[in-house]
Image 1 (cartoon, helix red, strand yellow):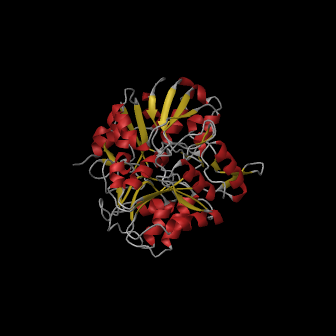
Image 2 (cartoon, one colour):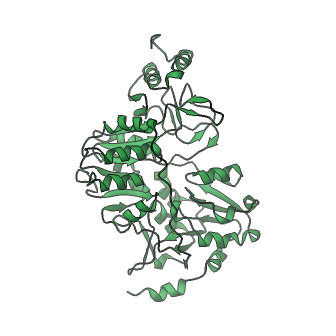
Image 3 (cartoon, helix red, strand yellow):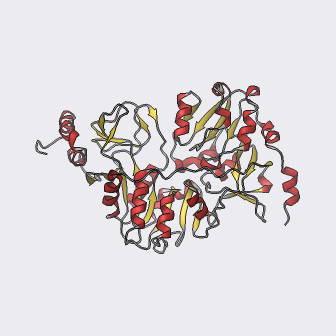
Length: 446
């Protein structure tokens, strides 16, 4: 069937498309590197006409045009499912707020929401011959967004990689109300970070030695997971699989080194499964039209049942800090918001349920403040306002540059002793005194 006529009928300018947005509307703005560009600039032109427009999205990679004005908060509010550095700046300006939710729950949330979006708009690939616009590396929750939005506007970007192999990874032209052909900017990138530090390398070594041949991998965001990936690429490991929330550059390195074939996966054999991808152009080029990849909604990738079905599942994620009870904070520094719940807890739970699976929370033992003070990431109790991302009952392995400990099943005094053993040496005596005050220190020896 030829969809060119319908395409022409629905093709409009960005300025024309955003006329449907009214004061008080909820507008889905896309997700990560599919956040609108031309439509964002067009909506910014209407700032003075609008008030109380709630925008919804997450992991912004550049500042939206609607927030460039100092008074933007009087007209637009950003409601984020997961924060980036840009969104943290918007929080400081009073323009943005985090919506706490496990990332895996997003599709269901949209489908059951009593306040659906009036408008959904996001970047897509050019339409294929069957009339589908692919979501690019953002299957995530986008089909649920499309199913519940009042109006759907797609912004076509020829640079968007086409991600196939799964399901709920595109929208048909029959569901679309308007089509905008934007300026086709390069897809926004998230840098892989600088060279790994000695701490990153030390932590990565401790994790990689725990990974068996045939393991299935999930890597989180950050320098340490990326360093683990680089080290896996240089290892003798083989027959690895991928089932992850976020597809990152490290997976490309591991795959190109011949370590990934998915042959031992219990489900989705021979496929690298992911909910969204964000990285450098190297990664976007690799996933474009790659039949080895499987793009699927986050309700599938992060479902504990999917994760636990995969033998020897290895989950690797970061933490901001953790306390002597084994509570993991990966979201805030006290009341200062940093990221979000994401899928960390899903993978911590799913990996432990997997046959032979392990979840690793990794962090440096310490950090330096802006004024040069050395602070411990292992603390007696989490600071007021800090978020418990992973409860103490669910924490499995914790790794710093000073070692790794398995907290599963340990009593309070055993946990304190284990965590203090991998804390920075400068803080161990102080942590022992704190543990004694908290009645979780059994031994006086170190």
